[in-house]
Image 1: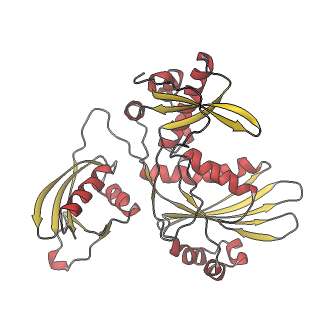
Image 2 (image 1 turned 45 degrees about the vertical axis):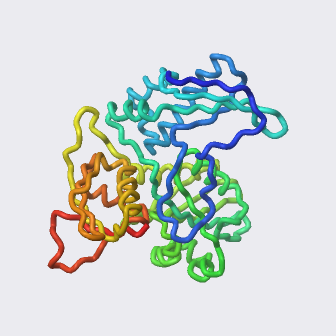
Image 3 (image 1 turned 90 degrees about the vertical axis):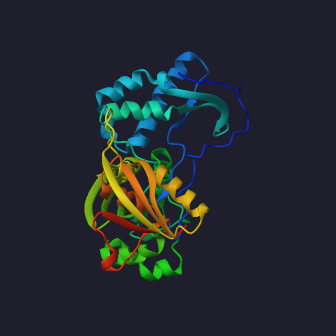
Length: 364
């Protein structure tokens, strides 16, 4: 364990960057950068060794869930061995005093070594999910036992929204709720939302620019059961699934787990533990007008986990030609770019297009 630091209990503590509130809908949201993936805060009884080791195991479990996106990897033999030796992955530790209701509570904040965690996952052949993550816009219509229906928005008060908020924070998934302003109500009336009309939902979602859309209708029966039908829109794919649970938390997390696993499967990278990627692509970028744009573009590309290295091969006016070595496929590279708003596909005359090039414009 490296750079282990302990701090005394404190009364005021800046919450880690992970503990953000995604549920403020912002038009044209696209992907969001999730910080704090390798940081976890756990309640402990005291500062003794036994509680600290338990917190390490619990914290590393949550971190692995965040950086893989799929619960199934928790059954992997390499992961279970790592959890038994969780203290070896700890980089820094601090304590603070929080509150649980009116009672004070001791919390331990553990930062895990990203390089060690990723190396363990890579050796196990488990894909690692980058911090630049696709956003999920959630349209959720609830029908109570009295038969009344409500399409929930960012200002709504409902128990299911607290569960969604907790999932978003715990798993590092940017989940957005619609504003439910006049435009939303006009584009997607409650009864249309309840019917899960795909075209109407796509139209109403367009203003938010989210990378995926989850729509659900939830019937809360007089006996307390939760009966739901869900529709998940990602790229051009449409998946519909149902769910039935007595417990609202199990019901909500089940649907969110399902779509999170799909997004992780699409975007997480399975790196080779001992070999360097030989995937290469030539990227032609317009709009690189000055040194600031040049530096910004290189920094942007180097932060993408799918990029192993990048170098400039030709500069012609405001056009820059880059040689990019990848950790994954060219398709996945373009998918990562599509999550952001800084590089957009550039439409060139057919006579200027070469099949071996990717053409984009820098618009930051």
